[in-house]
Length: 492
Ligand SMILES: NC(=O)c1ccc[n+]([C@@H]2O[C@H](COP(=O)([O-])OP(=O)(O)OC[C@H]3O[C@@H](n4cnc5c(N)ncnc54)[C@H](OP(=O)(O)O)[C@@H]3O)[C@@H](O)[C@H]2O)c1
Image 1 (tube, rainbow, N blue to C red):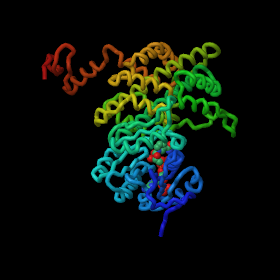
Image 2: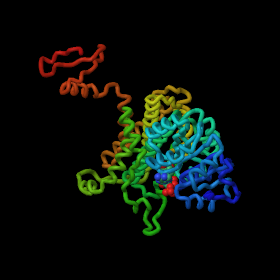
Image 3: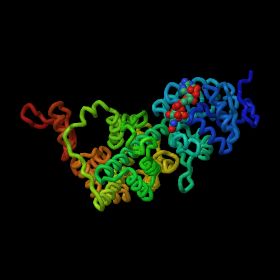
Image 4: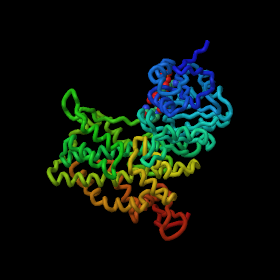
């Protein structure tokens, strides 16, 4: 019995004419399939539960050329060769299950694209296993949520150059376009490179959101503004160097009024945030790679702390100042300082995120072009921002830039912002407003520019209790002081 579902165009599933297939038709997969179809590609569609496939064809079948399939065999048979098959299912075991369902039906040179939020180590494993079976595996980060999937996401594919040659033009067509018209997709690098970059994208997203949240809290508690006033401040900021999707939606959220109570929406939402996979992975990997991503880590921890309701309840009465809101011109001047602090802290977050990508690239031999990564984040993704054009320019001018802070333009901007940055943190500290993101960013900046760090003392302590040895500033070699004897020094 032919179990395939036909669309209005009467395409037969066995006609081997779909240029691409999408399996997994929940919100992301369905919209991605529609995006391909709207861009003129014939798309085979499949889902474990066939009702989703039928629903897609019924609701959106007239948007382009779809070939519905209810069985894996029909789905694979509907694809032209080399087959390009996108998996958009729940990350983890479901992805492995789907790969195992389809791989035996594929042939040499076919391409499986995993568009889910996979951990890059899983992607490396899957790529290796499938390569041995003659199948290309393209672990692909996709950012932009359901709207992005439909209208144009930022796409971060990893995998072989050969698979990108066949897939790249299609991804370029469905991707978001930056303001200069460039598609927001690039071949990031081999095996897990795409999912690694997507992971760090999400880590930076966490940091961006935390910094924006702290700016809001400062404008509320120290400047004394209402949510509606703060929404206006963010709208103004969105016309300047902070112009970004996250600032834009922040203004929308802050100006929203709860219909049930008439109160600002932000005042009726429980102040407990979720911290799921990718932000946490970014920090875990940074620890393994030895990369200080303190701003991203603080963002993950801030969400985690917000969810510790019992701990917060038990601590609510602890001593500390209560913020005394400013007013008039003083409040407005403080708001300008917060913009400076937010911008400087944002530069640090991106500095840390790009450091992690560079470290991952070196560790796994990915040869990632950092400027190209900045370029594909300019549109479609959650952290899209005018600012990314400048990061791209910094890496294009100097691909071996050791840190974004070493770029002259960013260094000059921070030099100009730093007085206000410090003033804002001074006010936050003296008024008891928690600003872990701003503080971590400034501490990172001051640590990097320090002539001497107290790590020398740390090394002394380690040598004292554990004979861990130390290096000297004036001579080569490793040394140990005989602390419990005569405190003479020996070279080891
Ligand atoms: N939502 C976003 O904004 C977003 C953004 C970027 C990336 N992603 C990633 O994109 C992927 C898809 O996300 P989503 O939100 O659309 O869907 P989802 O809720 O993560 O997953 C639902 C889909 O997975 C399928 N599935 C689950 N277990 C399966 C199994 N064992 N075998 C076969 N199919 C299985 C479901 O099929 P049934 O219908 O049969 O249950 C359904 O099609 C995920 O990896 C997600 O992390 C999501």
